[in-house]
Image 1 (cartoon, rainbow, N blue to C red):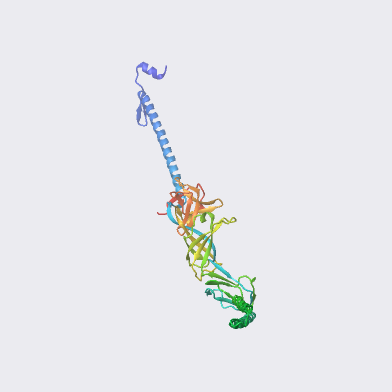
Image 2: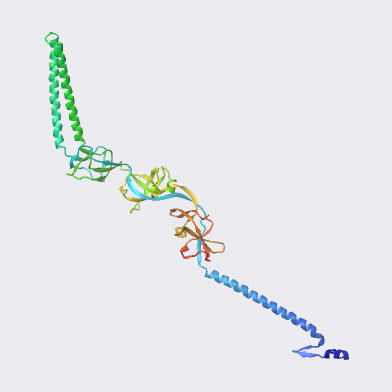
Length: 397
C-alpha cells in the first residue's frame, strides 16, 4: 500500500504543492499531464511546419537562382512566309550563236585586215584580204580567151551566113552548110567555156576575201598581216551573231526540274555590281552524269560589260513557295547537316535537323524540319549545347 492510499484511507486531504507560482495538489495531476502532452504535440507540429516551410523556400530559391543563372537567349517564331522562288546558279558567259570564220578558198598571204576584236560588222563585210596577184593574172588570161573564142564564133557565123545565101544559087551544097553550121556552134560553145572559166576564176578570187557570214560582234581575231593561211589554218575570226550573249548557268538536277523556258533571270558578272535582265531560252535536256547538273541557257542583250568567257552569277525565278523563313544566324550546320536550336516548354534547348532551301535577302527558306511555330534560337546557337536550360526572350520584346 502506497503513501497516497494511506492518506486517502485515513480521510486526510492531499498535500498542496506550490511550483513557479502555481499550486498543484493531487487532484490536478491527471489534468497537468494531458496539457503537457498537448503542448509537446503542438511544439512538434510547429517544428514540422517550420521545417517544411524552410525546405520549400530553399527549393524555390534554388530554382530562382538557377533561373537567374540561365543565359538569356533571343528566340523567334517565324511562322510561314510566301517567298518568290529563286535558284542561284553560276556559270560562264558566251556568245549565244557563235560563228567561226576561216579560209574557204585556197588561201595565201594575208595583206589586209580592216577589223579588230570588239568591232561590229555587217553581213558580207570584208574581214581580211589575201594576196591575189597570181589569180588576177589568170583572170585576165581567161578574159582574153573569151575574146578569142568570141572572134572565132563571129567568123564562123559570117561564113555560115554567106553559105546560106549561095545555097539558093546552087554554088554551095547542103553538106557545106551543115559543116559551117557545126563550126559556128563549136565556136559559140568555146565562148561559153571561156566565160565559165573566167567566172570560176573570179569566184575563186572573191573567196580570197574573208567576209562576215552575218552581222555581229567580232569576238576574236586570230590572224595578222603577212601570215600565210589556208583551209587548214582554223578559224581566223569568231563572231557573235547579232551580238547576242548568253549565260550557261549550271543548275542542280532537282532545281533544273523546276525550270522552264521563258522565266526571267538576273545575271551579275563577277567583279561588277550591275545586274542584267535576261530570260531562260533553253533548259538542258540531259544531266551530266559526273556532277548531276544541267545547263540553263539565259539569253542576254549585248552590253560591253558582258564579256564572253567571263564568270557570272544568276538568280532565276522558279515560282513561289510557302515555308518558314529564318535569318541566316539561326541556321547552323556541321558534319551531320543543317540544324536549328528549338526551346521547348521546359526552356531547354533541343537540336532539330532541317533542310534548307534558297537564300534570299530576307533569310534562308526552311523546306522541312520545322513547322514555323517553334521557338527557335535566333543568335548565339553555336555557344549552346543540347539540353541546356535557357531564359528565352522573344525578338519582338
